[in-house]
Length: 233
Image (cartoon, rainbow, N blue to C red; front, side):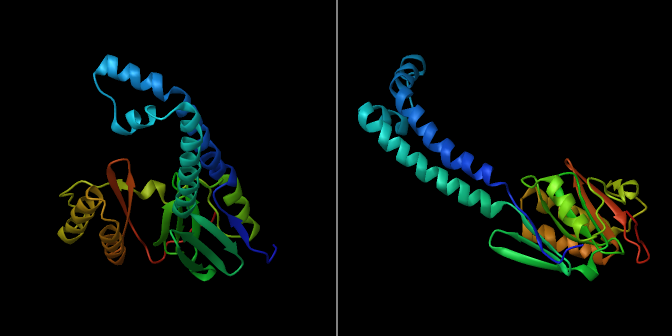
């Protein structure tokens, strides 16, 4: 095991797809904008205003103008994609997760299990309480595996060690008390309204009540958290 940190982030090639692809799209649009606009007007009796405006520019001018616009759009999109993407640093003493100009440090002593579920990176305590979950669709699963195993973390790969304990939530289920049902109803509404802050707050409340919850498609699934629950990969 090396003491050097392992960094896992969005591949640079993804960013260059934006930076190079947008100018190429601008160049292609400059060549087809006139016939495309003419076809839309003849077929649909209308065309979007920006398209008509671009069609009114001579091709010799449209090419550099749209290529420059493409360069700007590509740089902006690559910057936003990099900010939105999760970046993970795995160190011997803990894990740093960075996203959207925020960083979170998770000490090694709190980590009991790490896995992907299925495209989210999830970190649990030894008792099975979720302390981190974030989309990791832009990250290489091979690199994540190598980074966590390199530092001897309890890595479970694409497998939740508590998978068999999850159940679909059904409102009114007698196995849960009314307080838990109220929290799950509230969480369901916050998900529908895309209120992430409130969803996280309710998520924490549920864990304080001994209930872990996750989303599978449009369904909420839950399991009970045991203070004595430990796992071995």
